Length: 323
Ligand SMILES: Nc1ncnc2c1ncn2[C@@H]1O[C@H](COP(=O)(O)OP(=O)(O)OP(=O)(O)O)[C@@H](O)[C@H]1O
Ligand SMILES: [Mg+2]
Image (cartoon, rainbow, N blue to C red; front, side, top):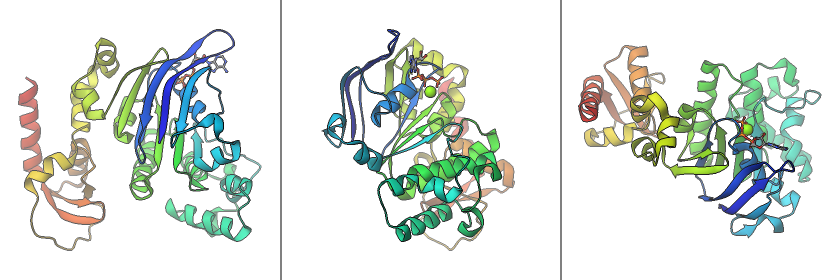
């Protein structure tokens, strides 16, 4: 879907911001570009929609060199959401979300329908919110609208540059979860920039860890945590290794072994997780609900209960492995 081949970016001050990187993002995959400030994440991302031009190498979307894709077509293919939202304060929520569809000359009816549909995706009542201005929204709401704007023309690719970076930890977690849930339905190809290793592990199918304009390692979160390729990668993961290994073990790996054969109806919306959730999520929910079992779903299908004692046994075995 997206392919970088020996791509570099040298800014006019001779600074090599991106240094000969090659990687691919598969269709429907979420690739997280992770690394410390100044390592070249934003530059890498902005080369995909040509907001920044590469100095050498080639970038392909669906095997077409982006040099041969015109700007309108590129806008149709890529949505873009950034930190500090980037909403236009003089435009209403409706006008902000409608920017790209208007550019693509969609009919008024089609735009109206699409904006309503998008607002509903994040639980906004269209009638209540579409005529508000960004200054009449909370930070979390603005950020959600920023994400909806990126999705407006239903682009196959969504580029997100620290989209939740400016939010407080609680709102951030909520928006991350809402986006993950949305993503599992709409299955876009996502390139997501962050410097936060926990956010990376949570959001990514694969992580590209960058340093000094190069990619140090590109791997699934689990692989990165389990087998860091070199000292630099290890340093980046720092003291969080055990926590990260719990975060990168999802319920799928654990629950499969205890999968019950019977399905039952389940209505307690607060006490449930999906197979994609991690052991940490399960621990959190056990603590919060004080229940001894949690309902597990595969997307929307109820699979059965995860029992607290089984989870604790599993973690205790993991701890033994580490010693
Ligand atoms: N327009 C520019 N002109 C000159 N140098 C630039 C320009 N934009 C970025 N740089 C430099 O390129 C390097 C990479 O910047 P980039 O914005 O890609 O980093 P980043 O990984 O996104 O960092 P952050 O996490 O702080 O956003 C930095 O050293 C930065 O100073
Ligand atoms: Mg950046």
